[in-house]
Image (cartoon, rainbow, N blue to C red):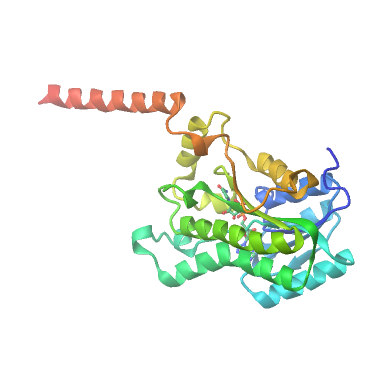
Length: 285
Ligand SMILES: NC(=O)c1ccc[n+]([C@@H]2O[C@H](COP(=O)([O-])OP(=O)(O)OC[C@H]3O[C@@H](n4cnc5c(N)ncnc54)[C@H](O)[C@@H]3O)[C@@H](O)[C@H]2O)c1
């Protein structure tokens, strides 16, 4: 512990259960001296165990659907009431695609579902920031972080319409980062995280293979949820006051790689097996 967030106060969206990235961020923010408020949708509060986290971090949970502006207005008012004034950081750790959930592939999207994916996973970020700014909820030099994934830049088979949502999310960080930065020195960044075993992650087609591939490809291996939380804490701390409007890769080096020795070895093995099968088939003929 470094007391990196001593005296700071923050609002954390998206802690569903112990696997959630937001759960780890909340625990570490609290360990680093921050006071926090937790929020999630009423359904997720009922389904998950956020109350347990609230007890551990000696705080409250305020229900809010991040797609509903009225919920967000109530949330920001109540959070300010709880803190007795403005606060310093916000984590947006929210993602959901009804197309992914219902198994609709990218070439057969349901457009009502797509609208929901974009609203929940990206536009909600705009809504959170707009409401916070209108209510002047954040202290100068505050920090806002959302979680993204490299499918915003590169095609990752199976990530589906969430890729489009992440591209929009990262764009919102840049567009609002300029406005809020110029006005109040508030920084807005996205962290592009390695594939991680969580409830949202498990929805992605072939997550285990994807995790294995990126782990073999990255020189440092995949970053897990704890690693991610550590990184996010630095972004809430005063050590990163001039970092804004960035999409920051937190992925063990994956984003800069083409092919690694470990991945190539596996590929070679696959080719050997394929070649052997072809030879065996030819012999039988
Ligand atoms: N798990 C991964 O592989 C991975 C990789 C990169 C980025 N991310 C991103 O990290 C973030 C957190 O996901 P996670 O992996 O911790 O999974 P998670 O399932 O634990 O968290 C997703 C959260 O979104 C919340 N949510 C859904 N709809 C909401 C709404 N309308 N209003 C408010 N909250 C809502 C859920 O209740 C849940 O708490 C997401 O943005 C996800 O896309 C995840």
